[in-house]
Figure 1 (cartoon, rainbow, N blue to C red):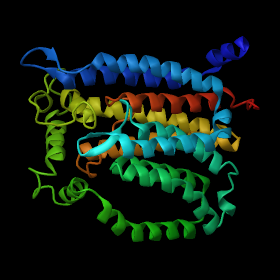
Figure 2 (figure 1 turned 120 degrees about the vertical axis):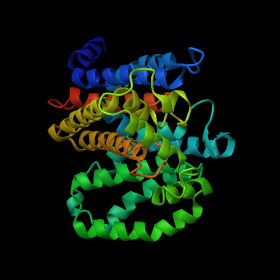
Figure 3 (figure 1 turned 30 degrees about the vertical axis):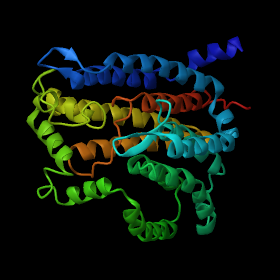
Figure 4 (figure 1 turned 90 degrees about the horizontal axis):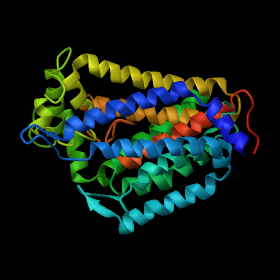
Length: 366
C-alpha cells in the first residue's frame, strides 16, 4: 500500500495540478476583491475560506487518485442511488434560499452529483460502441439521466440540471453517434421544451425573456446581465486596477463573488485578465481531453470526456451569461467562483482524471 501511495505522488499529472493551483490563486484574489468594502476597508465575506476548501480539495484530489476511477465506476450504481436519495432529501428537507431549495446541512448535493454523474457515464458507456448503438438502445442509456435531471429541475436549479444533459450529449458526440440519431434526439428536445417552459419558475422564465429583449427589461430580469456587461466593458484593455472596480465595490452587480466573478476580473484586470482566465481554462480542458485521447480503456476515456464536458459547458455558459450572449442561469465559473461544494466536486472529478493519467500506460486492474 505504501508503494501504491508513492506511485500516486510520483506519477500524478503535476502540469494539470499546476493549472488548477494558478486558478486557485486567481480565485482567492478575485473573491477577496468582490467582497471587499472600499468605504470601510472591511472584507465582508471569507475569501480565506476558499483557500482552506482548496486545501481540502487537494486531499480529495489525491484520495480519489489513489482509489482509482475503476473502483468508482464499479460502484457506480450504489453511488447513483445514494446521490438521487440526497437530491430527494433536498426537496423534502432542504434549506430555502433565493427562491430555491438547493442546500442541506450547508452543502449542495446537486454539485456533488456531478462527480456521481461522471462515474455513472463511465459505467453506462463502458462498451464504447456508440457507432453500433441504435436509437432505442441509446434511449435506454438516456433513462439514467431523467431522475437527477428531474430532481434538480424541481429545486428549481435549471443551470445545474442542464449541465447533466449537456455532459451526456458531449459524451455521446465524442463517441460518434450517427447523425440521424442525433437529429431524433434534437426533435425530442424540441417537443420537451414547451413542457419545461411551463414547469419553470417565474424568475427563470423572466431571465430568458430579458435575454431576448435586454433593453426592455434592463431594470428587471435583465439587471444582472446589464451590470455585468458594464463592468466588463468599462475594464478596457488592462482594467481599472485591483480593488478599484466600481460596479463590484459600489454593489451594482449582484452575486459578484459567485456567478459573476468573471465580470469582477474583467473590470479590474481588463481584456488582458479575461483572456488570461480563458486561456487557463482552454489549457485545463486540453490537458483533460489529451488524457482521454491517449487512454485506450473505455471507462477511463469516458470519465475524462465527461469531466472535460463539465468544464467546457460550465465555463462557456458562465462566461457567455456575463457578456450577455446567454441567459443568466446561475452556473458558477468552475474552480474560480466562490463555493465549497463546487470546488470540492471539481477537485474530486480532476482526481478521477489524474487516476486515468497515472495508469494511461499500464491500466490498473481492480
